[in-house]
Image (cartoon, rainbow, N blue to C red):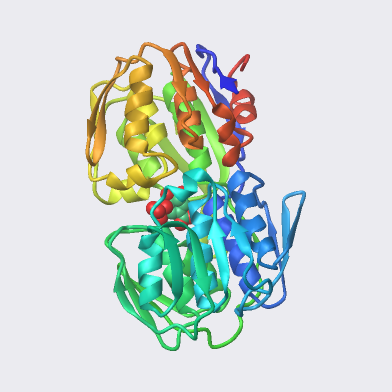
Length: 429
Ligand code: S3P
């Protein structure tokens, strides 16, 4: 599918919702399957990546139903998955395969976890190595999927320093540690998203965090089933906020999104670029902070992004790059090498696609620099990356731009175009 957003002269305005948070949805589905009893989770998003987690669990013997946004799962408990030796197909979803790896190892299940060609390119030793140190038996294809788990005895507790600031790795290990024979300690090098500790904690697990160190005790009693409503996904809202920042005079609100501080880097970045960001109606869902967030356009200036802010905005760099292309000055992103291991090598992909649109961009090993005001227009490729597709399409609001392969956006935000239309973008083709 080729997507062309029209250059938008009229300001965008209004309030919309976005689908439920994917990170929370993955965890809700997986943890519900590890709990006792029936869980019910509302505002559950139906997209490529969330279907991956449900499908993989169904193959391993834990089916679920999703009707009108309500997910229902009858938990199997924290014990081996019913379909011993089955393959769980994780599609394009790295969160699915890495979190499932923790559950398969922790419950002592035998199973294979596999995925798409894109997923098979992503590094899996970051979870396989520490799981092996806990006693799991895992074969990989040279550190990549498929991951083949043989049923092993009870895992051993570990004290492990996670070398990358990755929530997927930390979550995998925290889940596995619920099945270990003693308390484990994990240290991360930065502020990774903490949804796993919050959600498992709300289900009765004992996970305590102090700074960047978390201690996980083995389950003393079954996990309680989950009854919750997922907040909207700030990573999807990001594309609407970026649209508001890009179209002069705009002011839009996305209601009911998760504003966990480990995820709100994008709001800080947009604010420091000049956009006006405000929050209202603050509340709490399952121990997660939720709010209505409004972004208003203002003249955009370049920023420098590095350190913790990179981790707190890890999924939002394609959108940040699109906004930076229309800011005054040179936006520089450093200390962001992890972007090379996402749905695509996002540093190379951002640089290549912005250049295809005429922009001046520099590539570094650990980041990139976008020279604002140089993008003229053209055709970009989505590169099999949903976030790149939506971000490059947004450049179309300010210059003649089309994106080929844009159907990949259905992996995460199928209502992207209807949401933009609801906010005032005309004649999308
Ligand atoms: C996620 C963690 C991040 C993020 C991904 C979702 C999660 O990955 O990029 O989209 O739900 O835990 P890393 O943990 O690999 O940084």
